[in-house]
Image (cartoon, rainbow, N blue to C red; front, side, top):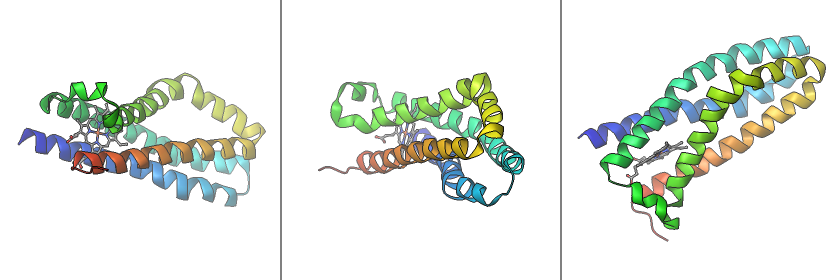
Length: 156
Ligand code: HEM
């Protein structure tokens, strides 16, 4: 029963986290071009993405904790030794990437870099942010696809 609940927490946390990244990548960032001044763009982006990033800290933490719990309860640590379980490695990699960005890079230097550079050259900065989000979203979606396929019995 606890495994079923941990699985539900894992999936709900992912829906919030990756769904939010999806929205920022395909709705918020492309819409930035329509805002006239760099100041306006920065203010809108900061308000929406800042709010999401605070919430994402909770969902990323929940996804990681439930993932670790599932690995322990399914006795699945040895999967990390086998290449056919590449989707387990992918899950940990995606989780690590976002954890580093949200908990280390953003508070330490990323946020300050954004505020400084977005005033000077907004086009370049928003293009870079768009590219980074597109890459992270693609990797996350592929991971979700492979993890749900392979953990539910898919074999090639
Ligand atoms: C520390 C990080 C993580 C760990 C240790 C972890 C571990 C696990 C484990 C053990 C399972 C159950 C596998 C099975 O039933 O055989 C699972 C399921 C799953 N995980 Fe993760 N996970 C982590 C992060 C992520 C991330 C970042 C994603 C997506 C980007 C993800 C997507 C999924 C999906 C889609 C499932 C299948 C759910 C289902 O169909 O019931 N996981 N995870």
